[in-house]
Length: 116
Image (cartoon, rainbow, N blue to C red; front, side, top):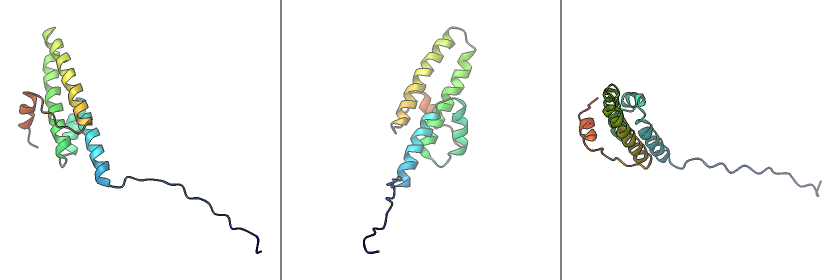
């Protein structure tokens, strides 16, 4: 069997994240952004106690959520205030996705008082 060639199968080139820290960084950015979605802020405050970045955004999201609940019951002015809160939520969401810790004026100061 001098002329037979052995068939070889090529292994697929599968790439995995080189560093699990980079994957954790991307997860933190995602969870930080999602923490601005009202009730998720409470969950992330409780379950991500060891992650400073997620905690920062979850605290601000929690304060925004509480303020929006209060304004929900105030006709007209409260609804306009809730529109402003929605803008702050959107900005906070986008800043977290970019990996930034933007301290919302006044809201960030209130959020700093939350200690778990």
